Image (cartoon, rainbow, N blue to C red; front, side):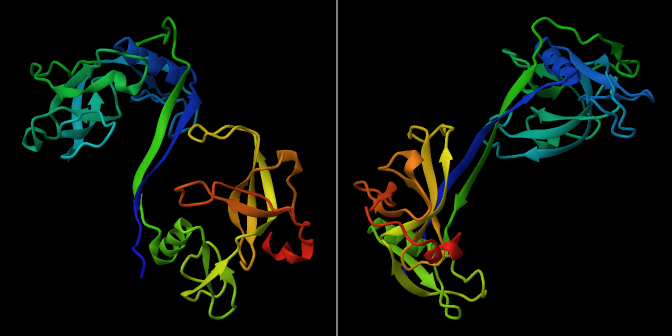
Length: 318
């Protein structure tokens, strides 16, 4: 049995969104060391603010300023901080109800250990030295000893939400780090690709050959183990023209990405088409893989010069 493969993978993309008047005022306020909430029709103060009442669904825009101090309502200790978390040393995730607010804000609490954290403890905002108009302008919370009853009279103060150079949009990086193992069937497939071969597996019942193999027939549900070498040539069954350049892909647009049914396979795989103008790619085009030195998979597929395949030979693979 070939070695089972595994590798670290990252899925990452920037998520861009515009801000309405409430969120714009909230984030701009953080940049100016001001914490804003929003007041509902029934008099509750919500921090962080929302644009619609979670109970009545009415639009709400009455902004108020609350104190940068508050009370921990619940917490959990984080012994091993991960990449891009607020602190690099162990800390507590806390829900903090700021003085003057009726809801709690989730953030990090810088504390020496879990024994020093408890529900009901008093904390205050530690502001980031450089602030840009983001939730990270609150670097974290820190323990705070105020006098008995000092926070009891804290009341939210009306605020017009107006600031110079207001923040109107944000870009958040969404990222997922994980370790992927393709399993027995695809490990064998990848090992074969390193030898410039395409190997699929045949279903013992319907006798269809699947490339790439999944270890089981998607139609019959039976395990597959019989290996079958297919290709190297194949037929374009359908395709799309890509006009948006990928951030980490050094390929000039436009280019063509296609489903390719390799000879002897009963499932089309994905591949880029090269060696031909993008507007000349067509269904039925006969292609072959192009390998680069040291590569573990084909760089792209190019036309073989053969006549186009008859539609009836690949229509079941569309």
